[in-house]
Image (tube, rainbow, N blue to C red):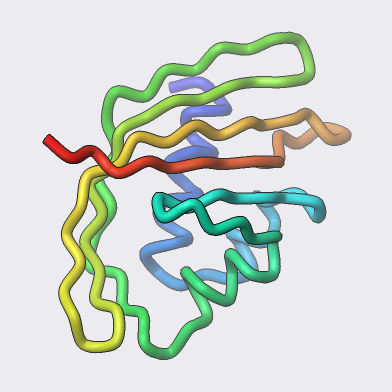
Length: 121
């Protein structure tokens, strides 16, 4: 497993376990994310909506079809994720395709952008 694949999996574990510090370290300060509903959020909004919100309880996130393409100090990662969570007491079970862009910042890869789209069939 290469360094980027490890970081992608660490991001997922941090999300599921609610590890704000770990996830914050993986996301760049100028991180932007577009969720499956088309909502745009910055790093703070992402952490607040997906990790810090008291009405969100992650059950699992399974990743597969991970494809990593490196371009020097940048990398584009596509994957499929099976998300299972509870939002405000309602169970959420969905498959999404996501694209994440990582940039080398110093010695570390940091996630600078992400986008997810729901898989309907």
